[in-house]
Picture 1 (cartoon, rainbow, N blue to C red):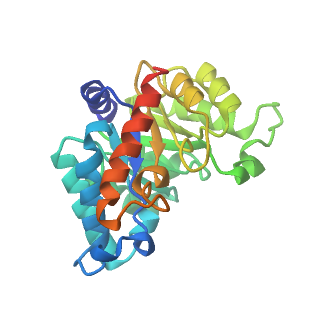
Picture 2 (picture 1 turned 90 degrees about the vertical axis):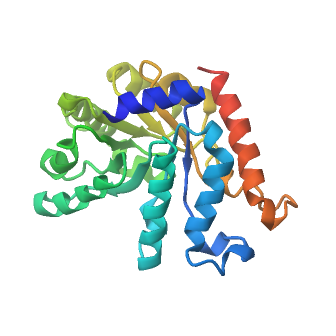
Length: 267
């Protein structure tokens, strides 16, 4: 089961930090550009530098959706898993049944995935049925525009994000469901933890988006299990700091170390 494996990893590293591998080829150091798979070369260096502090890695598929990108992603996932580190694929999938079954094949490789609940239970069933895999349902996202729909009130008076959380709790019959709740919405984080105390959260937004670290930890974990994610603030930590391109991974390591230490303060 994904969450049991994640709990073991959290205990082994004393960390709840998830590092987003958003490998933008336009931000790669020049000396990696002549590699066969620059994104794979970049990710391998990042993983080697930060694995001590990583409870999980979270590559976003948007950065890999081309032939070389998929190859780089497969190498990245296999490499992290070979080190015993879970991989959450940030894919935000969710579609009608026959299409969802194809999307769910991504879980043949990754350990968990993010999904969109907009099309309802049947669109997520192919993911939920993989009971050994984790399924993080988008609930209250960290982007400013998330409020456009997620905060709208239903006839019952509850906002949509609270209904999503309640549904996800119902869908958790196999014990493999979590929620994506952004650290930039700390009040919602607290309210959601009260309403679904047993669901682990994947909490993005504490890095470049400036989310609240204390709230992310206090409300993101269920029985000590959950993830707080940072992407750009870790993997591109050396940009604009005078760090040499060759030492980009060293800068990432220091950023991961600092953030992991901050997260520990509130556990």
